[in-house]
Image (cartoon, rainbow over all chains, first blue to last red; front, top):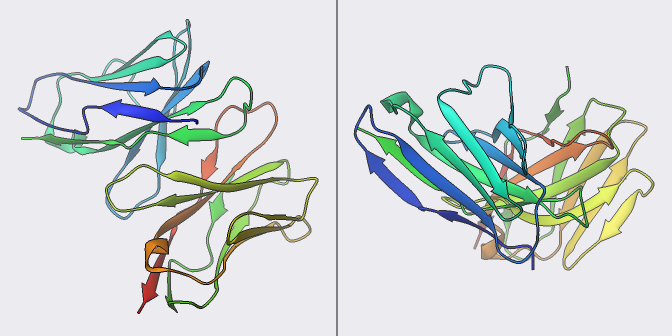
Length: 116
Length: 112
């Protein structure tokens, strides 16, 4: 149980294009999902908290117009990196909280984004 | 501000030995703690959690100890195996806050 998937697992794009990453909770409903980015040999940095049916809450320093988050259902949240640049290249990971056990976050496998 | 840190960034142990990974936290309001394991190129995997009303919790080959007096958390892995090689993160949370705060991580290497 508590499986979270992400798609795609990796993506390479040209500078200036937009990339959408999907996060799905496969066997549970998640009212809250989280988006993190992780640079090599570093810890996870929370970007935003996504609540189903409402606007995401962004962490300080994260541009909401650049990292668009949509959480339209209890099993799906999307992160769109708009006008991507090489400095946006990173490992993006989502997590989801089970509605029943609201403390534990279960993570997806991550998406490796490379912007050329 | 809030922070969760680790005493050692790297740890090497012999296969079959026990491993202890430590974590310090600073927010006395934290009442929930989780250990995650992250293998290279993968997302973090839940290992074990503990609430502040407990000081010890055991799982399969893993034990988490919580010392609230000194704000210290540890993960013990018994009879380490090559598959235990990974980066281990502790994370803290508290009731009323949605997000978790992650430590910097400890890389555990198992020597044959």
